[in-house]
Amino acid sequence: MKAKGQLRYIGITHYTTGALAELARILDGESGIDFVQLGYSLATREPETTVLPVAARRGVAVIVNQPFEQGNLFRKVRGKPLPDWAAEFDGANWGQVFLKYLLGDPAVTVVIPATNKPDHMADNLKAGYGRLPDPQQRDGIRRYWESL
Image (cartoon, rainbow, N blue to C red; front, top):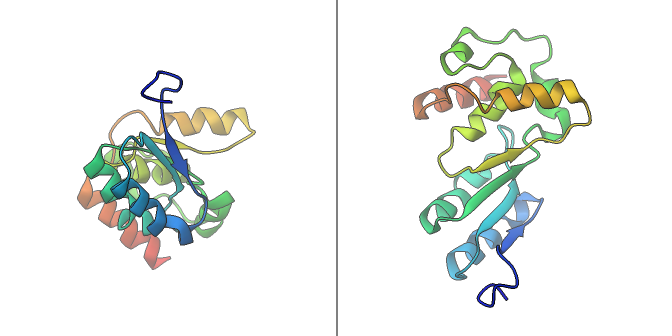
């Protein structure tokens, strides 16, 4: 259908970490896949070692869903001040730090946080502006997260 012009893109998706190995296998073995959608966050980093390297190598776009783990990331940092180092990559609040962490991964194409609140949507959009964390800053974000 793609070759005939009947569809433009082919993508695969799954919402559980148990399916990541299968997603990576499909991406590695099937040609013509344009994008993969998966859950990825600071709390769910398995994609960093399974799907993301394959997607990068194959030139497959990555759509990240559930970047806030249905709010669980915010619950973990509730009452904790934003560290000064967040300003180094223009992170103005925890939501932006969480999103910028993901966007700082070269394999990630887009992050789709879900919200029904316009002010949260506007704030989430700001994570796409300014600097993104470099690999060393991403390591620091991971270490901080693991220390909580």
